[in-house]
Length: 232
Image (cartoon, rainbow, N blue to C red; front, side, top):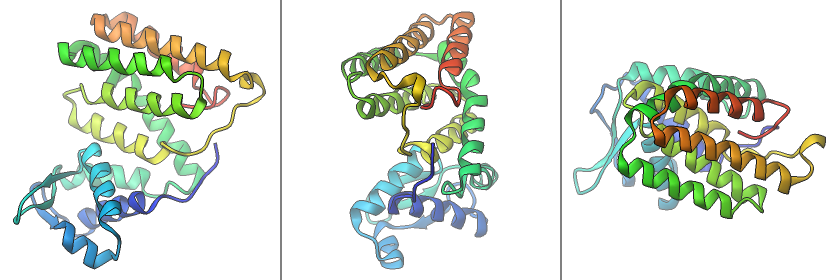
């Protein structure tokens, strides 16, 4: 994996998190309206909306509509500060490695929580994403998009807000970074087929609510997505 510049939306999301930390904003504090952000940054509505979506996914902000709406702090500043310290410079390869290490360390907690707390709706969503992943396994780029979608959806299940926030924050830092198969994964069709099978077992374990099986599936996923394996 190698570094690429952040998109404008990613940079803005990082900047807004820095505002929360530096201004010591508390949970529920108003950050800005969408129009104010346009005036302050000079960025377009689409970029600001995408930044708001990224921050909302991380659990950092609430997006409220209406004349009195805008972006509001969704978490205690200490949580945002912790994530910001870990993840604020995704252009730095060392920080990218750090983000991946944090994400990997949280993987079992997130997935076991999903097995313990999944609802019928969660099961339906995971099965649908898994079906999409199978269909898209002929293209590495399409597969990776489904892969990120699956892991985000699994993370949404946990009631542990801090773990979910930091996990999604690390994903936001590394998602979209380009990756290339190494010599051992040059045959993409075979490699992606193996990746699909590993994720299918993870989803089956979670939807069955089987904690030991989920832990074993996490270990298989970790073995496949080690630095040698390449992608996440």
